[in-house]
Amino acid sequence: MLVDHYNDNAVTCDWNKICNPKSGETYLIGNPPYLGSKVQNKEQKGEVVDLFTFDKKCKTYDYILCWFYKAGIFIQKNNGKYSFVSTNSITQGEQVSFWKNLYQKGLEINFAHTTFLWKNNAKSNAAVMCVIIGVRNISAQAKYLYSNNIRTKVNNINSYLIDAAESNLERRPSPISNIPLMLFGSIAYDGGHLFLDDDERQQLIGSYPDVLNYIRPAIGAVEMLRGLKRWCIWVEDDEYKKASQIPPLLERFKQVSNFRISSKTKSTQDFADRPYRFKQNTYKSGAENIIIIPRVSSERREYIPVGIFSGETITVDAQVVYDASLFLFGLLSSRIHVAWVKLTSGRMKSDIRYSSAVSYNNFPIPEYTEEEYQAIESAALSILEARELYPNLTLSKLYDPLKMPIELRTAHENLDKSVESLYETKPLLDEQQLLKTLFSTYNKMTGGNDA
Image (cartoon, rainbow, N blue to C red):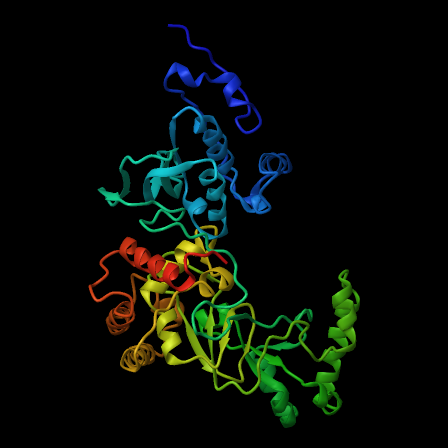
């Protein structure tokens, strides 16, 4: 039997001119570049924009989504089906907004295999987190989710590959739950001249004891996870004149000013006349304590390491919540929060890139009693006490899944029970159950409306 063969760019060609939908099954053989938006070349970026002229978010899409869309157009009027293997990033974070483009064409996800590790036989043994997604025209036929070698018949498969109603979690400026705002830490744009290591701090204090009034602990993700000490010079407007009388500080202010003047960015140049201040200042004075969450966390960790510090701490290169309670610390330290963040945040390589606008602001917290509040606070305190049993271990080592101390693991498991009881009276056994419950709570809180 003679078979026609075509070699063309699947993103730019018209599939209907090449493939006859009435001839039976159509095979597309190829390995499209599984490239995120940041690693696509100029030509590929242009192809994505040209295909999705109607979608303002397309510049963030993985290249493989072009195939999903082209296949959707192909089967739309032909009662067809298709399925592709893909990296799992297309079902996470803000890329999920792509799927509405298929739903609007009367298509749906009819089966999916949730995230699994794909390994090949190459010498380098590449390992990628993948999903398999099947798409068809809307039908009353059954839908199935596959996970851990188990097939489950489900009512619906949403864009996150969860058996739940469709919810496109957009960026929000504030939380849907009754919790404080999460901010990004302050940014100096100073050339490093407003920061001190421990030795520099000690030398300064030894020569100029008054300098202690202008030095604050500076903590970002690296310092928090590795237990490093870092300090910054922090001077308020009404303190500048007095602080400038300390020669080493005055010299540092001059260096900051020169650094900012030489910048190519006008807003940085304009800040050269305030060399004692961070250019972007999100610090809130008067807070009793703060919670810090790293922007990026290893996918290997079962829990996101969350830190709690005194209110005088200046947060840099991390997310921060001011005047946060132990209750919130407990929620953010729980496995149900980790499951939500892994699904809704973006990724840096394979690691979690925490999004306050999407993950935190959309995190659904149901109503709770005073008794439930106290139980979570008590369990959260137990986590801090378990950490203190190992003063020589950094947070990074404490949360290494292969080395996590039994006391800390037990404290987290007890916290999980308390947090999950807010959502369900029955134990939530796996991640699918956790996420299904979270989406149900989210839809109840928002009325099913996206941000």
